[in-house]
Amino acid sequence: MQKVVILLSVLGVSLALAMPVLARDFVLSDQQIEDIRASCVKSQAALKRVHTSDALLRVNIGQRYENISLRLMAPLNSRIALNGLDVVDLATTTTSYNQELKDFVKNYREYETTVANALKLKCSEQPVEYYSLVDASREGRAFVRANMVRLDQLIKQYRSQVSDFSQKRDLK
Amino acid sequence: MNHLDELKHEAKTMSSWRQNKFLLFVFGSIVIALFLVFIAMRMYISSGASQLDLSLPAYNEVRDQIDVKEETKSFSPTGPINAEVMEEFLRLFDEQSQRVVGVDGFNDQALSNKSLELQDINKGQ
Image (cartoon, rainbow over all chains, first blue to last red; front, side, top):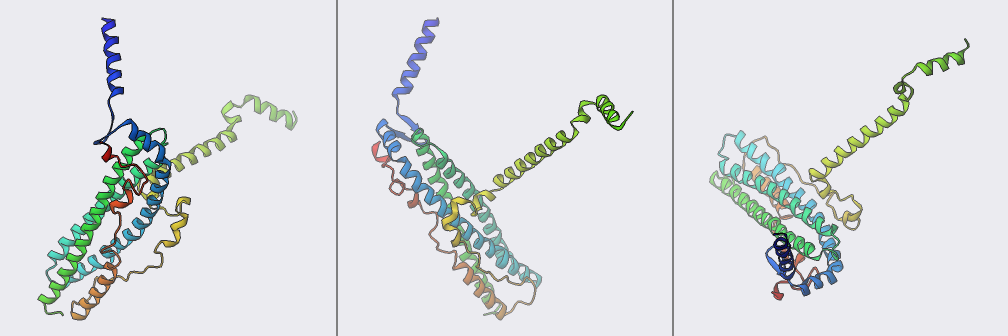
């Protein structure tokens, strides 16, 4: 019985070693792992530059997004409501905008954490983990990008609704 | 009994806790300070503030590009609604939206294998 268990264990380990390494949804061959190992230090330097410029963009654009909501949208909605006029459309867009802004903040946090983890790794010792984190960072970045696109759309939508509001009430 | 003898006698009858009171006070203060620093650091990290903290040494090169001087005028939440007011609002809104709409941020090119100087992994499959 003991021999069978040992034999099965050896077989299992051999199979695991023979199989290509799976990182997220792609397969890395030994050659590819070696390629990553060879170029990962340069790659980490490039990733660090991206990380730095992303942080700057996040701070600058995040502040502008917040200003639009807090200093422009919310005050106009309040003013229209205080004048007893219909503000439902504008308020709905503002709510969507604020929710999208929250998602942007959340997605950026997750993305930044993944990139920071990739930068902390000793990539020459853990090339597969490094590539896996780079791949996860791409996914996170795409989410942040999608939030930005949606925020742009909501800003345009709000602008158009304000114009419609003015036209309907002959305020133009 | 002179004063010195009184002190010696008092020291003998003192508990070890009372004898080391000052040391324990200093040690206790350090432990409390470390605990508070730990909580502050946890809050700094968990709130996401650390991710936006461009005063960190890693952001030296880009610090001067932060828009600290950028001013956004606030629209007043009270007052009448008329053509002039709406025109003023749209002017402020356009001014601010121009700074964000169409900004090509977080595009996928920056993390492509080519940009990160990595071999094209997908082609190798």
